[in-house]
Image (tube, rainbow, N blue to C red; front, side):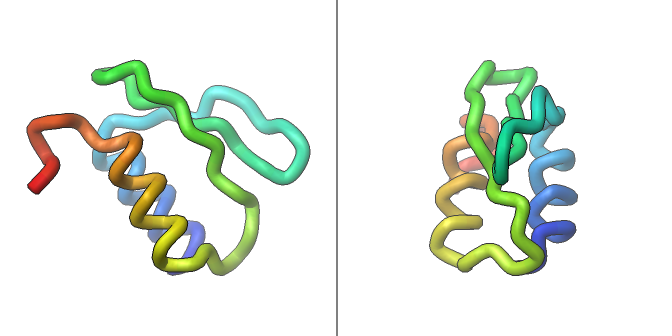
Length: 63
């Protein structure tokens, strides 16, 4: 998955960038308060991207 596609999805879920440290950005979901590091690579493995989305998504959007 392209990083820009992942970040667009996180913004749709209500996430905001909290800080940048090393090779990762930390994103927080303002609805749930969950925080998750996101690697700064052009391509992020699909398994990793889905895991990040699952951890940062709001409970009502889970299926």
